[in-house]
Image (tube, rainbow, N blue to C red):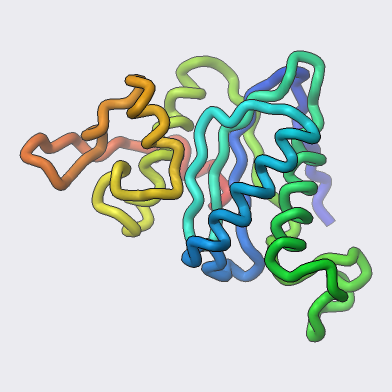
Length: 191
């Protein structure tokens, strides 16, 4: 087993990649996207944090979260989000049959990949690159031709606040934007 250690910064901002078990396209179903939003809202009430950016794709999601000043418990929040979503999806019934011994031993379902990928945001430049990466991710995966076409994203929120240009990264207008270069991120992001 690997000796993986997470880096915790009180009040830090963190980038997360979270995937479904065997990359099942659970979030291709809009009802499941709403279940996930409800699960995140439930966790935010229980353990406050700020969502700086988000994109929910069919089989994975990316988040930028900022925690309160003395808090480092992002793993607990992600765990609760996974549990709340799974309960909304399946109810509180027993685990499905056919799971591996390892998953049964840990009381894990077949909804989420066991772990998640996390990166502690270093500075404003790092934040900006990850913010853009999240919003461009549906385009990168061929799910939309422009960030504004993907509904399950915080991009629309930031456009309405005047933070993002609605045509940023857009290929469907007369204004052609260059494709953003995320090569420095893609080599490290857990997709």
